[in-house]
Amino acid sequence: MIPAAFDYVRPATLDEALAVLAERGEEAKALAGGHSLLPLMKLRLAQPPLVVDIGRLAELAGVRREGDELVVGALTRHADLERSELVRAELPLLAHAAGTIGDPQVRHRGTIGGALAHADPAGDLPAVLLALGGSVVARSVRGERVVPADELFTGFLETSLAPDELLTEVRLPLWPSAGWSFQKFIRRAQDWAIVGVAAVVQAGRAGVGLVNMGPTPLRARGVEEAVAAGASPAEAARRAAEGTDPSSDLHASADYRRHLAEVLVRRALEEATAPAAAR
Ligand code: FAD
Image (tube, rainbow, N blue to C red; front, side):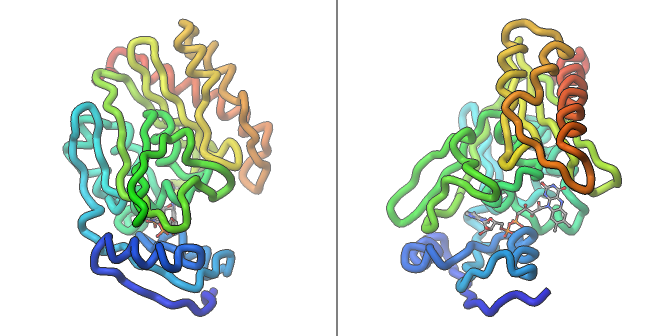
């Protein structure tokens, strides 16, 4: 449980951090909350020669509304999302999902940028990003680009971010008056989801993201199409496992996960379309 030796730098500004990554990106790893990277390093599943600590770059934290989007800084902690009046009012799905992550200690250290850049299929926030149809801003010394959620997750713990890029912002479209639901199936409080579903429904349009249903975070496109075509929650939920590739492990077999996905998507759509769900 002791990581391999590594160099450590703590840039004082975002520009300094980007300059370090421009020079040594291939061998460097950004450190945000450290709640995914450090366990991997201790298990020696990750052995970056250089750790670039971005955790205190205040310019990367905070939430603001810009037009019809919420813009969330990459270093915004899960606990801040959970408590933010703005997030609770404008995107309650995000505030709620953030509040289900791990325990208070994890939520006070973990960041939304780290959760998305880590791309864990068992993570909760990638499914929320996919359901809402958001995007992330990636910055390097070469400039800035916007990466839509559908193009971010490329493989198991892999994203389309380049080694010299930092995820700086998460842009989430508002879904005014939409109903929403977050279903997280766990055996014990504070566990990771065995399967999870993030859903938002607005006037016959749905966004649905799945947790732990394949090697990457996934969007349930079949379900979204069915809702758009007027299907009931139960009918739409029958398409929950389409395009998924869940694993079998200690907690559940792949078949059980497929079954759970259907049940949880039905519950999510029912909750999101119940009259009281609209906000
Ligand atoms: P770090 O660990 O610092 O980084 C993770 C990866 O992202 C690294 O590869 C790093 O280089 C990269 N990275 C970080 N920030 C950036 C950036 N701005 N730009 C580019 N790359 C970046 N998550 C859940 O979703 N649900 C849970 O129920 C849950 N339970 C947990 C329980 C425990 C006990 C622990 C330890 C973690 C749990 N997590 C859970 C994970 C937690 O949410 C992590 O904090 C999160 O996944 C990673 O965020 P971080 O800020 O800690 O990232």
